Image 1 (cartoon, rainbow, N blue to C red):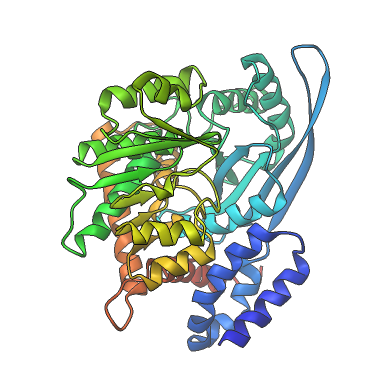
Image 2: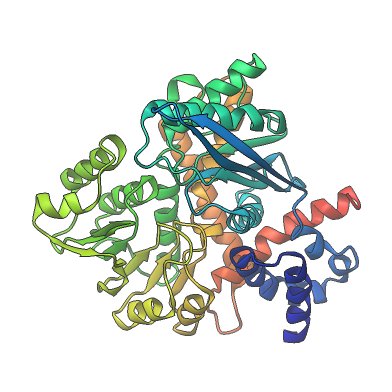
Length: 446
C-alpha cells in the first residue's frame, strides 16, 4: 500500500512542482483514500482520485489599483475552481502577502471534502490575492476590492461559484466586493456569502466557524465521557474564528488562557472573561490593533514571536494559519496533558504533528471536519438568499449544531479503528470523498 501511495504522489508532484502546501494536503488524503479505493475498484477504474486532485479550472489575473498617494499598485488575483460534482464552487477569498497558487490549491482541495461533509450541495473552490489589507486605508481597500471584482465577476455567480471571506477578507471587504459585483451585473444575487445581515447575510455567520469547532470538540469529548466545563483551553489567533471559539468556550464553562496574532501571543492564567474578550473584539475588529495591547492593559505575559503550544492545557484550538503546530509543539501539548486538539484553521498541524496526536491516541480533529461550521452557515446563507427569506438566530444556530453533529457521526462511522480509537482524520477524508466520488461516477468522465 505504501508503494501505491508513493507512486500516486510522485505522479501528482510531477505536475505540481514547487507546490508544497498542495502536496501536503494531497498526501494526507491519499494515505487515507488509496486503501479504500483498492477495496472499491469502481473508483480506481474511473481514476476518481487522479481527477479530484486536478482543478477543473484555475484563474489568475492582475489587479491594478491606485493608492492614497495616487500611485499605481499591481497585485495578483486567483480563483481555483476545484470540483463542482455536488454543487457550485464554494470557498473563501484570502488577501494576504503569503498567497500563492500552492496555498490556494491546497485550500480548494480541502474545501471539496469539507463542503461534502456538511451535507449541503456545494462544490469546492478558493481564491484570493497577495494584497495585504494591513495598514491600508478604507479607500485603498475599496479600490483594490473593486478592481479585483471587475475581473472576477465574469467567473462567479449564484449558481456557478460563490466566494466568501477568509484571512484578510471580513465584512468590510465582502461589502466592497459585493457592491462592485452588483454594480457591474445590475442584479442583487447571493453571489457572495458573509454579507451584512441587512443586505442578504445570515445571522450566526460571523460566529459560525468558532462556534462550530467548539461544538465538534464537545462531541469528541463526549465519546470519552468528558465535558468542556472546567477545562483549560489554549487558542491561537485573535481574529473572527478565535474570538467566537473563545466566546463559546466561555459559555460552556471552560477557561481560555491564550490568544495570538502574527507578532506573538498573550498568556492570561486568570482566564479571558467576557469583558476581556469584548476588549479583544474591539481591538481587532474596530481598531485593527495588536494582541500585545491586551497584555499591556491587563498586565499578563506576552511572548513575542512565539506560539502558545507550550502553555499547559486540556484542549487546544489551532485557529490561526496552516502549519502552525509542528512535531515538537505536538509532543509538548501531549506531554503537558492535552487530551483534545480541534482545528479551527485550515491544515494548521504538520503531518508529523498529526502523527504524534494519533500515536498518543488523543482526540484530534482535522480542519476539514471541525472548522466546517463556517462554510455550513455560508451554505445556509445561500439557501436563505434563494428563498428571499431570513431565518432567526436560534434557527440558524440549531441547524449549525445539527450539521456539526452529523459531521462528527460521519467521522466516527468511517474512522473508528479495530481498537475503538476514532481516527477523525481518516473518517473525515473517507466521509468527504465518498459523496463527491459517487457524484463524479454518476456524471461520467467530465
